[in-house]
Image 1 (cartoon, rainbow, N blue to C red):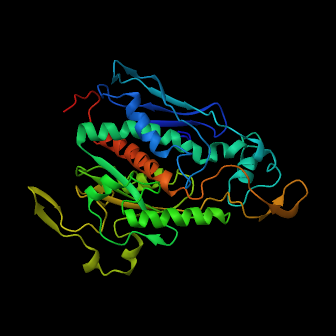
Image 2: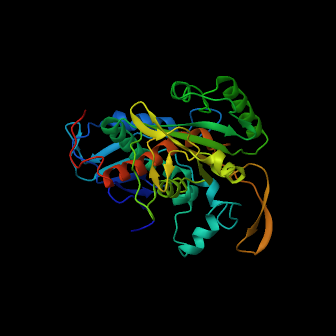
Image 3: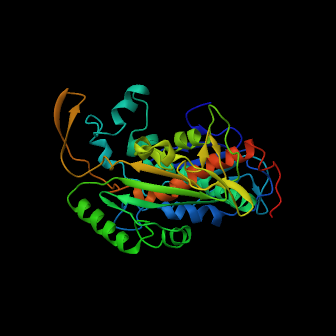
Length: 368
């Protein structure tokens, strides 16, 4: 299996480059009988679309999805589903100037060496955040499948940008209702305004910001996961790291568990609403690589975008001399707001794959 394929039963192949003709996803293994439309996919794509506000790149792609195969009369047929969106607002001019001066903390030089100089370097090629369009298309399908057949909801939001962080307890409904009501995708309206101001201020200085996206999955059945090498948390973490700029993933208490006592971190079982469930959820809904029936809770850390307007030192690979480089073009001052629907999508792909592998979703479905 190549590096462009994710999943074993709900299989997603991602293809396309940032400044190529199109980007797309080929999905094999989606059950027949799922009601799906262009609008279902477009809705999720629109949430990550560039050029919508001052806190994102000003590249203006409409990201209009085309479903070319695998859907007939409004239902999936069980055949492979091919979806693409065409790249239309492409400007490779600024990248011509950078061919001999690799951008710091980008894959430019490393990809050039690995592929013998044959890689598409325009806009970062396969290493651009543009490829997350493909995850989002496939993820929209997975989200619909999980929700329609199992009642699972995948809900992500911006928890932190720079030093600004959500510290108060948020309930699920507040997150669901408010996360997409503002440009930064933070469900706390006052904090969202502060985050927006910080991003615009930082962009004005020619710099960028990182942050954290939290993702909560509700109505998860017990037993998703295939230990030991396809544990649910392991597969989610692997998939999440395919999102450019991701630098860390934690579940439940995460790294803070290292400072806890066992008596503090353990999740005792109880009888809740007719089900045996963990009373607390320090594990984040996954124990031993299996879902526990509690909400899955994970957080994804993003680094600040490497393309900034400030002068940076790099090596000219033709002259072998250090020199300053200024990255021009259209870049996100922070990827966090647009990463929210991408995290939802990539998590949904893994969950759909495990739900099919575990027998929770059959090959032909009837909508409940």
